[in-house]
Length: 461
Image (tube, rainbow, N blue to C red; front, side, top):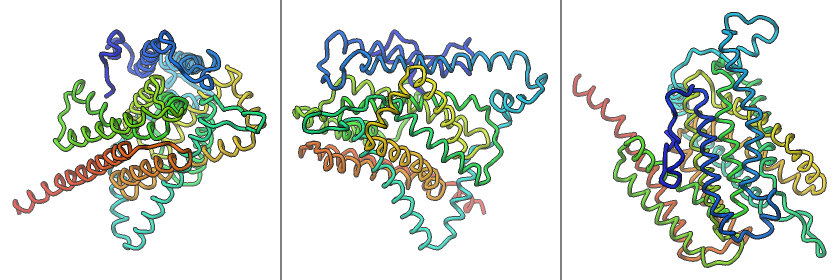
């Protein structure tokens, strides 16, 4: 469950009103978060934060202004769509509808409301089949998954930093120009991911789809906003800082779970969360003395990272709810990306930013190559994620991706010259040690939980 309130935004009520229809609550939450984000950023404007001119040439380039303009573009699609859905439901279109448009409207608005059991049983069955295969074959499968994930996401990380923090077309007399529209990069990523997922669904048999299509729009909207925040944050903070912040999002999740849901945690979870806090603090404090632009952590970057974490958490929770319908992970990928393409291309066309970005690609062929490769890595990386979890489970996948985060920080420092002190390096080591401890402890707990019923059965026999 997402945090309902926080002392920093105490005047904003995030808790859903019981009188509000359930389908509108995610949109209302996103709207309230946008308002909270705007209020949180006001100190930046009033205090005249010293953001380098390359980041803020005009109000049109200021991240908060861009965020609100993008949100307005999404609203111009969401609001009419919501009104249409309500109209069809009030008219009982499922019973009275006829004509050539009926199957499309039925799929988008009503779907097949019959829900199924979560996909865990299917994944477990697939994993049991892999256990029976030879050890050599399993090893090569694991090597294939790990290599695919590392290549896809390490390349993606390096290109992401290149596109957002460096100039294109620089010469001795011309400093070049930076690409500023993060939303266009999100659109590029989503349209290729949509194409790949669509081809996969067309070529490989999938379960019969049951969810109303409009329900993907909520996860799509939060996914777009989380990706936008992630790209935009690189204008204000270094890539290693961003990676560590994403690795430490377990801390706010645990805090909100304790305060809001009254969840209880094991001692090792508190220990690893404390270690992550110490490690991140060591890294940030050791980097604060470096005056180089790429390692200056600004308040804007912190706010954008917070936005990324909140929106990303909402996306995963909403997708978990959607999996109660009978669908595969690739069907989920396709459904979310269809709406992502619709939202981003609509917003870009309304702002006139689509043609401007295409002209930038035409002026700089290097940027065009980077943007396409970035999208390819993102799309195929998602397929590797689904395949790895299906074959080896979430624990193995988490270990591979934790290693990827460590390698990403190392690559960023080597390629882009980020200075990391000894204390900062120790902080990074502490964070990843804590993450591996979490994976190890969680796997031990699961094994212990599986043994208990077995032992009980033996005693009864």
